[in-house]
Image 1 (cartoon, rainbow, N blue to C red):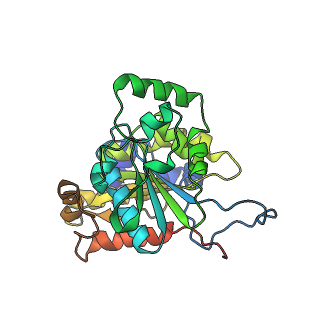
Image 2: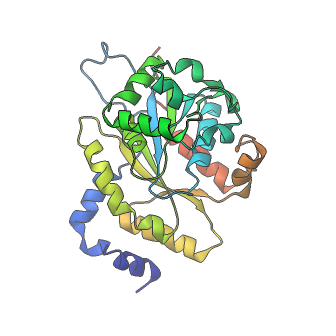
Length: 300
C-alpha cells in the first residue's frame, strides 16, 4: 500500500471501493464556471446582472487564505476585472495584506451602527477596492455575531447596496472554521474556493466540509466549489504525495498554487504580492486561477 492509499485508508476513504462517495464528492466539488458558462434565463432581460462573488474559506487556519485572496484580487484587477476585496474576518488582517489605512472604520462597527458600506472602500493594489473588517472589541464582536445568526440576508443586502455590476468580482476572505461569517459568505457565493495545504490535517477536514457545504448546495443556484492546494512544494516528496491523496479523495484534479517565498514575504513589506513575484510556478498558478474566476461580461 502506497502513502496515498495509506492516508486515505486511515481516513476511512477507499475511493476505489466507494463509487457513491465519489459521485457525492463530484457533486460538491464541481468545476469553476468559466466566463462563457452563463445560465440561460427566460427573464434575463428583467433581472439586473450581479457581480460574481468568490468566497475563500478554510477549515484549518494558517493555510495562506488571506495572502491568496490578496494575490487573486490583484491578479484579477490586472486582467481587466473590477475587484472589490471584502474582509469578513474579525481578525481584520486583510488591511495589512493590502497596505490600506487601519484608521478608517470597517464593516464590523459600521454594521452595528447600521451604516452604509460604500464609504468604507479603499483603493489598493492594481486599482482594486478593499473593504476592511475594521477594529471592534470583544463585546461588539459578540453582539455582531449574535445579530448575524438571525439576519441571514445581512451580507446579501450590503453587497446589493454597493451597486456593483456584472463587470465586478467580489473576493471575500472569511475566518477559518464553522462560523457565522462562513455561512454568510456561502449564502451569496457563486464560487467557493476551499483553501488547504498539502497535509493530512487538511485532508482529514473534507468530510466535515461536505456537511457544512450541504445546506448551501440545495438551492436553485448553488455555488461551484473547488479545492485549491496552496503552497505546494515541488521539492518535497511528501507534499506531492499529499496532492495525489487529495486528487484521489476528490476524484478529480485539484487546483494548485506552488510555494513562493516572495508571496509570503509581501505582507511583511506591505507590497503587492504579484509585484514581488518573479516569473515562476506560483505566478503562473495565480494567473491561471484568475482566468478561471473572471466574471462574465455584459453585452453592453
